[in-house]
Image (tube, rainbow, N blue to C red):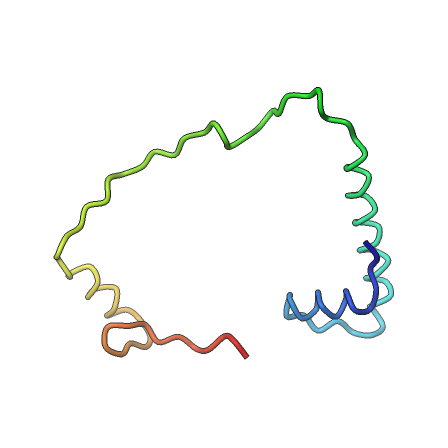
Length: 96
């Protein structure tokens, strides 16, 4: 993967950062080094090594879902919301 001006612009947009033009070259070099390091990890043969950590066999204790008709809690939450209309939270738009 090559880090070019287009990749820097996309990263800046996705991260909502304003990257100064004077720092873009230095950032491209640093990101290229990081990508190069990660590419080196792909060359390591780990086929004969057992995983030392995995979440596949782990279990998460679950609780039973119990439906109640008591709306005391929801009224309490709604009463602390900054903006509410018809028992719904009003949030600012985030999509341009």
